Amino acid sequence: MKKLRYSLRSNRIDISGFLLAIGSALIAYRYAQNQQLLLIFGILIPFILLTIVIYSKIKDRPFYFISLTDRKEKDDWIGRGQFEYSRVNNCFQITKADPGCIYSKCLNWDNYKYRFDFKIRKACLGVILRAVNLSNYIMMQITEKGVRPHIRINGAWTVWEAESVNLVFPKNLLLESWYKCEFVCDKETINVRIYNENKKILDREWEIPQGSLIFPFKREENDPKPMTIPFAINLEYGSVGFRNSGNEKALVKNVLIEKI
Image (cartoon, one colour):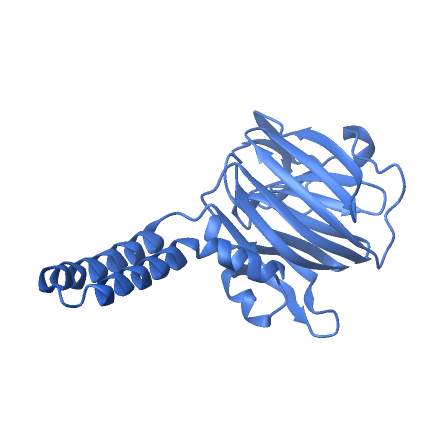
């Protein structure tokens, strides 16, 4: 039902054009004896349809809905790892996916809502936000206890524990249970919302750090005193996705990415 609703919403311009064309054809049929009207509608109808088709193709879409209930829906995701359709669960499973998979159609988006349903099967679910590429992004790792923010810059990680950023759940999530999630990226703020059906479990904000992060760099494998190198945080835009490393495993479906 969700897939049909969002499909109609996504193609409302094309549907409106189709209905307009039918209406014009009925009017032309009604006044078939009037050669002047027939000539006008004969030119007008194709022109309107062509204009609508061109506009709908070049217009930047305000949202994408991906149900993840069909294996063909992986075609628009880029990355590495096992992000595959599960016939048993009728959704996608993410595991052994490092650096992860991101959606290719909103790489230049900045402020948006990212919603989906998820079930943690083992350990956690890594949620990718503002992914410039697979080496630079924000990852909000949903665990049983809370949400652990990560920042990945040039392949290096900085991690914050859920307790230190006040993103601990009042009660642990249950493995093998479905939850709803919404991340709202608005400039330097990420709002985190987790739901159990319609009951809100968590609704808090996390501020994206500004400036630079310091990462160690070893000139040699056994270097006892690695150098420290600052990398600027530049995550003002980018796509969404999922990442689970090693045996971490989760199920996801009903993905909605919507501009704000």
